[in-house]
Image (cartoon, rainbow, N blue to C red):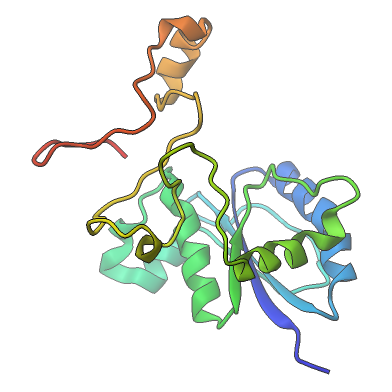
Length: 200
């Protein structure tokens, strides 16, 4: 029997109750697939120190916070600033260092689809073996398609946005998005001119 495929599940989180609910929801499905997949969860709190208790789990769980980024990266800790989406990069780095065959990142509020949770990892990995890529945007290649398939000029930066969701900061969103018509979205395909700054 072949060795189980090593899967690193990376979860950036902030709340103890939400984290427990996430782990409680996924644990039975990962346990069900234990003969095929060796799951190692990398839980990262975007806080100065570890404060939540994820509870005992039937799989390896690496629990980190920003103090661990400081310890591991030293004077390069600025690469992963606090309070940003970059916080998921640290558990992904640790999963890579741990030798995981595949790395999957899930937000702490992503739950298994009813009736399909047991097959989530299997279906996810099967999608890597497909030769054809499904287009989610008409005409343009969506984010994530390998660049060598594009047959175009080299890409320096590829940044995606949520469909029909303005990329606003939290306070502005609370005020402006009460009326969706108050925000005018530009066309979906934009090229940032050379020398111009673009907020990520």
